[in-house]
Image (cartoon, rainbow, N blue to C red):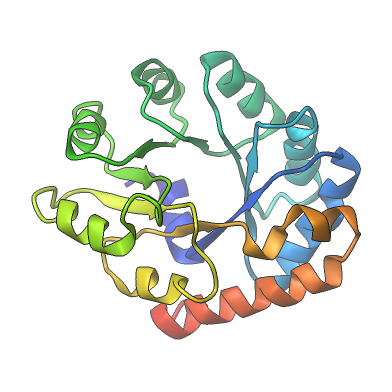
Length: 214
């Protein structure tokens, strides 16, 4: 497995961040680092995403900053140029996956079905996103489809929160979970970074309790 993905596995929970103002990037990154989750998937849904990745990567080199909601090869290039260390996409786009692999950038495309998972494996991947996790059947669905694909690990995202993340993390085929509950947009826009840090710490402590990670 790619070294970056191994690191993500040790962190256990990837905060999924939507930033409308790059001016919030530094404070948010500080809160995540202080809280014990030095990782962020900054979604490419906003104009501020690229600059936010650049700021986080520059100010906090110890952080694993990646780009999410990546739909095109052009977005891959922009994200990587800004400092993104990994790419996440909502679906399985072979063109985007191949482009990332050619550039040696770890990519976790979104999958739901066995057919999509087999396509990912055919492309040479051993980690896929499972999205949207809860609406698509949650942990029961992952366990059902994981059985025949013994080399595949999963990063479920979508509907995961502090109440259900423990069950996911206890399953040995889950690399990490993506979650936005500790970085909700209203908290960011209100500047409630202390609250974000507190919820991040709760999440990090849960990972440590389940997996024994430092």
